[in-house]
Amino acid sequence: MEIGAYSFGDTQLNPDGSSRSTAEATKNLFDAIVHADRVGLDYFGVGEHHTVSMPASSPGTIIAAAAAATTQITLGSAASIIGTDDPVRVFQQFATADAISGGGRIEITAGRGSSVETFPLFGYDLNDYDELYAQKLDLLLTLNNSATANVTWSGTARPSIPELDVVPRPVQGSLPIWIATGGSAPSSARAGRLGLPLAYAIIGGQPHRFAPLAQLYRQSAAAAGHTGDNIKVSVATFGLVAPTKKEAVERMYPGWVNLNVEMGRLRGWPAPQKASYLAQVDAPNAYFVGDPDDVAERIVALHGHLGHMRHFFQGDHGGLPHEYLMESITLLATEVKPRVERLLAAK
Amino acid sequence: MHPTIGILGAGRVGTALARQAVKAGYRVRIATAQPAADIELLVNIVTPGAEAVEASEAAASDLVIMAIPLHKYRTLSPADLTGKVVIDAMNYWAPVDGVHDDFEADARTSSEVVAAFLGGSHVVKSLNHIGYHEMEEDDRPAGDASRRALAVAGDDPAAKELVQRFIDRLGYDAVDAGPLAAGRAFQPATAIFTGSYTAPELHALVRHPLAA
Image 1 (cartoon, one colour):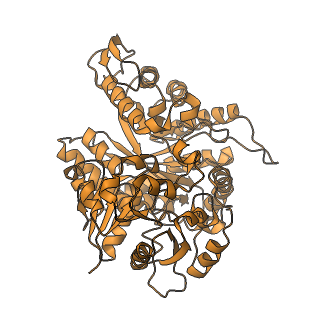
Image 2 (cartoon, chains in turn orange, blue):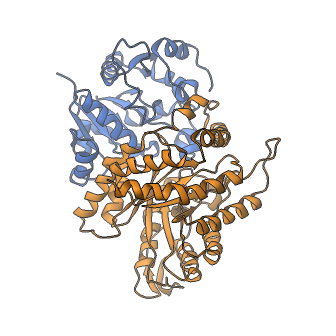
Image 3 (cartoon, one colour):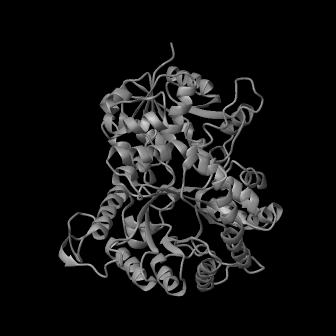
């Protein structure tokens, strides 16, 4: 089981509640990835969000920098909002990072995004949402699966590509490309039919309820003739590890409030209640906030339902003090991962 | 004999409603824009006990639930749904799903716009103000003091009564909010939409709607 982290960037707050700089948040994110590599974390996912509080808008750029500064960790987007980006540029950026890394550590995860902020920013029409995603994913896969640098593609979501070179090519010929979904059944079935690995973003409710979706994914893949290593599931959830459960729950809470106040202002939610936070921090609920034993046990329990091969966590939102993120990363790699391996081996 | 339930949409809302309706003993048919054969595996695994059908077959059920993304409402077939009781579980929620001119430029509620598009259906607005993962967790037996209530708005009394009985069997109290236009009280960014209430609390809120 791989253990990882993901982040959209987390702009720190001044004591008066005002935001510090997004440049600082970007540097903090880079430092967290380098730290994760040193302490032995398996995976780090980056972005894509476009807000002052979560400024990791350009995953490929951070990943290219991190590729040069790390040695063992797998790096990927989490996720690339492919519908409103140019798949050619996304592929080129990640293939470039792959070359810098020496090869084999760089992945792309294609997603639709949980918000629609990229549509006005990049000048797309939301009525084209489904068509943009489908066509651009098709182009990304065409580029990745091409045997040579010379690529031909045609569609309506982007100008056609008539026998043009798209370079660099990945070191190992292609990059792992994952599909991200928040858990709609048709998305799981589609990923299976495409034979692509599937990343579930589970941000609320009870994660084990995703078990039928994972089963649907695997059976859809089998029905389409896809087998082997590419048929696999990863899981992204909120999570923060501290020496004690009490500390973890207290450290995560202020950022959770800030995140929900910001979302509430945008979406018309009322003020967040502490009770609804506390309702989610214990098994079998969605926030993996605890000490190493608690978090490890919950990962293994969920593994019994989903059979996932990677679980990665977002702990930094709403201005979580950076040192708490760094400590959580250390504990994930050095305390949670060995426990997970021990518990899985004992099963 | 229970009415048959047709659900249009197999996303998070449609599948959660399907499971809850199967649990309540209903015969449930699900359809999407794809041929029935294409969603058979999905329905068998994710909503066991329900049946994958064509959209026209789902529309022929006694009670039809629209659970597709609202921006796709023009893909619904007015002819198939003429004379049917149709629950509108969809929402116009621009900050989450983006701005859509059909609703932004129209003073009516989203359900009234959809009802006008369908023309001959008995549209009832409900099931739109409960989260898809709450649907299968918040249900309680009738008479439980903490039982959650769901608002129902519609212009046809018989249609509303059918919907209210359905909601009761799903494990929720149904509260009559008035005509379809009164569904404004439980659209996104209202207190009802963002909260969770018992029947007495919800009765008070539909009479005196508050902003969230």
